[in-house]
Length: 435
Image (cartoon, rainbow, N blue to C red; front, side):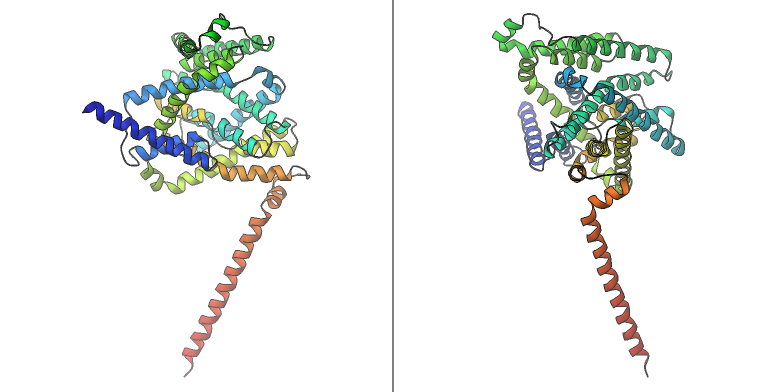
């Protein structure tokens, strides 16, 4: 009977996740947003059918490793080489300015340094899936704007591992001590060396590649073995298991076995990634969102606006013209997939309290759900690209001229109706006052 209940639970969870993924896809949202929604529906904030457990947390941890492994495989050194200077400088600017903003907020709100740093890292990263979808929808994926945006997103993915190492290192109790910077230097050196090594070759040659191509059944197992072995090795060296998974995927993604490995491991990755985002949804409490709705929406607006301004300003400062900096900055305005991981790492080292983690996760998820508005803004900026943009205010006035006209007309009608109502009340009052 217990087995029957377990199978029933699995059937419900997978069916709801599938349904939510399909619905969000139909609404032109990334399917991973649907998995978060499924977690909300099934979790304590919804129907309470699923709760966080050790098994779910273990699968979610494996999902993080597979997500990093997949991201590493998707990164192309050749595509990155053309824009690597702008991309790396842009990410350095994004991280630095985000840290400056959250440090200022931390001083005002009395946050400890660790919390300001974690929130700065969370804000700095952008949503790769959302950004690529926006680029595709406005027809800019293969243009110069698309290449610059993708280059910055690749640089952010490369920067995530050092950011995670710093976050985890702050949990040692000694703060940002010399050991953290030594580990960070080793990780950056290893990653930089791998990028340099791969950039000097067309493709890495996978040992026994011909044998793997003849025996497709063992390819998923070989890829998983590579991922988890590298993760275990870097974990033992104190460099984080996530770093090893990313390095393994990055090396494999720039080898002659990339296509075969992607095709063979995609189903496994999909299941584990679903569990990871489902576990994120389980943590979102709808009662908390409702009780703090004003605070959540205000923070969402401020974070998205500040992040977009940082993106646009950084790209333009680095020499990108407004017609590329505006769309690219807006497209990268949503928070990133790895922001969830950084928030969880901040919670694990007590840099973020449970309420702060709830707020961070909620804002990250809502930033994805609000992506259609940002997509609409990206399309309008894209339409403005042929013109001359000298400052942000005229651009916004031109882009949202239709909405401004509607709002002005609404207020004019409202004022006219209010004025007529006041006049009517005055006439009625004067009539009543007559003897």
